[in-house]
Each structure stands twice: as C-alpha cells, then as structure tokens.
Length: 361
Ligand code: F6P
Image 1: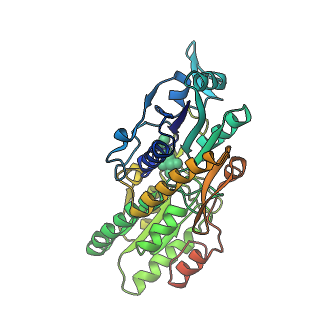
Image 2: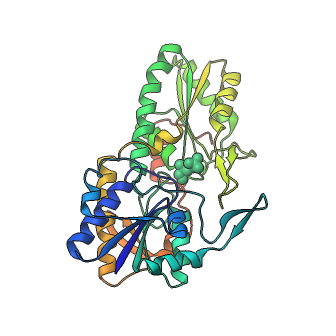
Image 3: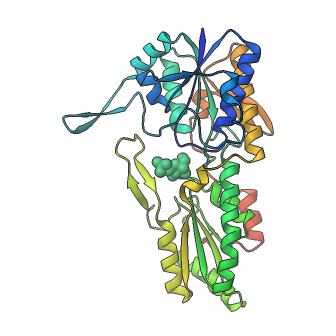
C-alpha cells in the first residue's frame, strides 16, 4: 500500500519542511509503505502525475523555500477549469482523482494546504477518501489553528522591509507605504507593523477613515517627525469604499487577487499632508525564501503529528496548533470560517497604546 502527499494553493516557506517530516516519519514507522508525491497540487492527482519519495529525496529540504512537489491555486477537481470550444467551463473531475488514488493504492492522502485545498480535501473525504489536512498559509487565516506555518516567515520578510524603509523614509522626510499580502485578513500587516514600528496599520477588519489617517501623519509632522511608515494589508479599504482588486484569475474558483490599495493610500496621504510618499508592494517576496526557525519547527511538528494521527486510526482531520500544543480538529471544523483579526484583540489594544493608528479614531 501507499500514502499520497500533495501541496496545494499558494506556496509558502515550510512546505518542504513538512514533506521532509512526513517522509522521515513514515519511513521510520512503516518502512514498507510506498510514499507518492502528487505534482502541482490537485492537478497532479487529476492527471496522475506523481513521484516516489524516500528519505533520500528529502535531504537538505528543511531550510528550502517553495515545494519540491510544485503547487497550484487554481486546480479544484470539483470545479476543474476546462476550455470547451474556447469557453471556460468548470467540470467535476473528482472521480478521476479517486480512480488515480486507487490506481496508486493510496490508503491516505496528506493534503498540505490552506482553506481552498483543505475544502477540497474535505469534499474528497465525503466521497470516501481518507485524508489528513496540514494547514499552511502566509495569511494565517485558518480559524481552527492559532498559527499556520509560513506566516512567521512572511512576517519576518515584511518586518525586514519595514526596517529598511525606515532609514530611507527618515532621510527623505517621506511617507513610506508598505502593502503586504494576507487576503481578507490583516495578520501579516498587524504583526509586521508591530514588529517593524509602523505608525499606521490598515487592516481589512477595520475599515479606515481617511481623515483619521491624515490626522495621524499631520500630528507626527507637528511633533517634528517628518516621516511616517504605513503598513497596509492588501485587503484593507476605506469606510464606505471597496477592496482594490489587482486581477482576476478566471481559472480559479476564488478568482479575485487583491492588490493596489498601497498606491491609493500613498497618493491620498501625499495630497492631505503635503509630504512626499512612496509605495512598496512586497508581493510574492513574502512567500519566497526559506522558513524561519518557528516555521521549520511547526512544519516538522505538523508532519510528525499527521502521520501519528493516521497511525492511530484517525482521518478526515486537520492537524492544528492550539494553545501551544499540536492537536487535531475535524476537517469540517478546520475549513468552517476564516480567522480574522478580532478588532478588540490584545494586539490591537497594545498597538494603540503605543500610538499606532488603525485609521479608526
Ligand atoms: O493566500 C496566499 C496569497 O499569497 C495571498 O496572500 C495573496 O492574496 C494571494 O495568495 C496571491 O495569489 P497569487 O499567487 O495567485 O497571485
């Protein structure tokens, strides 16, 4: 028999670390079991493209960014994009996935993914496939786990960017706006803004008031601080306004890709304060590079826990990090809702206590 592994959705630092942990644990506990890695997310399971994995294949993977298996954030087998006479149609090809799993004698499929891939995993489980979910995403927006791996690494990159923007902001007396990822959640903006000493943090959970943001920058100017640092989450938007969408990926079941609010904020702040502004869109740098020590450890714990969970006879669950411990939750719970920043959270209260503005007062 064999086990299957796939990485789905947007990549993030730590995916390779999980693959390594899964393979090492499996080979130690079940040396006879074949390990099959499906390529390019669910597309590999649909097209039956895979590679065998042994401990030799995971040598040196712990610090390596990306995923050796490849990934995709647009290949949902329940709504698979197929061009029919030039028109894009979405077909349910989940039975093909199930056939391919049977062909490969797959007993259990480890799906390493965010809310999209774990929702697919859940749908497959309802058709009888045994799956174990492993949550990843830089966005940290899965409700059933305190942290996903990838998040800490993205925060590291965004914080480093803020440190670097500080020096040039100060030299040129400018407003520097950093746009970070996170989709509909403001976790990356909040954490990096706190760690990087931002003056203003704009997150989707708190629609901002233009006057309040301008006031904050003007107040700094009046205090003799002729530069300001603003972190804006890609999903942030002004009161009564809308999110800025950078592009639509029509093959994707979640086609809107956010982006562009940073420039809008920079332009507005220049106008209302008379200070020069510049915007940096951090983009996919947040998903690149190797994982931080925290993410390496979390990914390793998740990988080992996922194998142990299956060996204990459990499946259709997701491993999760709750209250400092690795545990499991039913997959259905794991995908129920997105985890947004609670507006009254201790982190927001802390940030406000040191004068950081969220553009709401
Ligand atoms: O979910 C991870 C993420 O990086 C989001 O933060 C971002 O909105 C999106 O993926 C970008 O997607 P793509 O790689 O398709 O541009």
